[in-house]
Image (cartoon, rainbow, N blue to C red; front, side, top):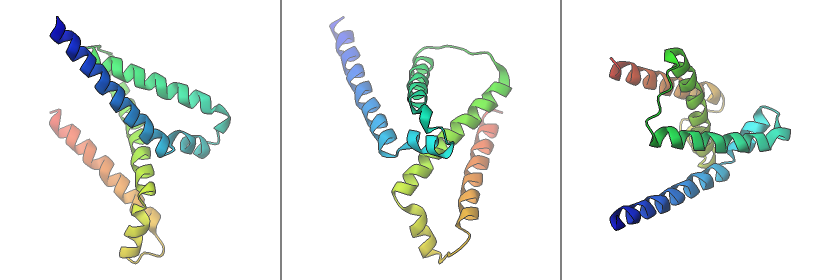
Length: 138
């Protein structure tokens, strides 16, 4: 019993540390204000924050407990698209903070046409992920 309490405490502390790190990264990369600025919905920033928290809680519950949501492959595809958009936003924000694309453009001596390069990278990542998941589910 004591061992289980200690493990529970350690797990709780580790969860707090990871949540703090993810929240710090989310704030540091300005993901929520960036999405609000892109969609011109800055007046509803509190809704963005509430939905981010709700998504975190629901994701944690679905991960920890074996909850099945039988909505079919169409819903799975829609969720995959939204997850990909969110993850892509994180990746591009991190790349922007790290100044990856300006360095990349200077090394390749690109003065114009960086947008197609970024779109090609995103399309390649998406197609690679689709291929990986399609082949592993067979």
